Amino acid sequence: MNDQPSDWESRISRLEEEVRDLRTRTDHTAADAAAARILAGAADRDVSEFKTEMREFRNHNTQLINALSEQVNGRIDQVNGRIDQLENKVDRGFVEMRGKFDQLAGGQQHIVELLTRVLGDDGKQQT
Image (tube, rainbow, N blue to C red):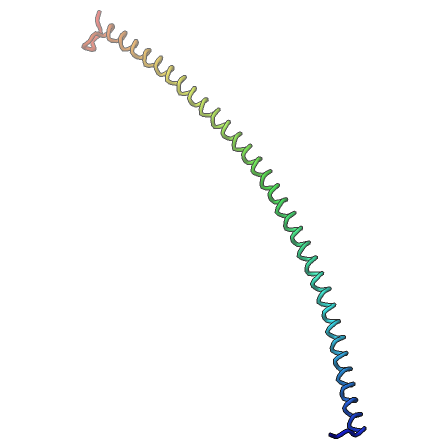
């Protein structure tokens, strides 16, 4: 074996240089890992905030839709009530008109009877 002091010194020198290089790499890796933990924590907070905002948005939209649904249902009930009123009014109007048409027909029949009596069945005036 070659146990000369200069050979040992160069080997030790190379090992020390490699150790310094590994320490530098380890320091960079530790710094990168710390930065990654910070970024991951921030991303986790962002996701949590986003979830909260989405939940609030969904709840608010649900409340708005429910309120709008109540308003629409109320308006539909009002419109249905008005339609029922109008149908009843039209029905009463038809019943009233039918009664007046019946009176008119009765009056016309009476006129026909009077004319028949005055003119006779043959349409000539009787004296």
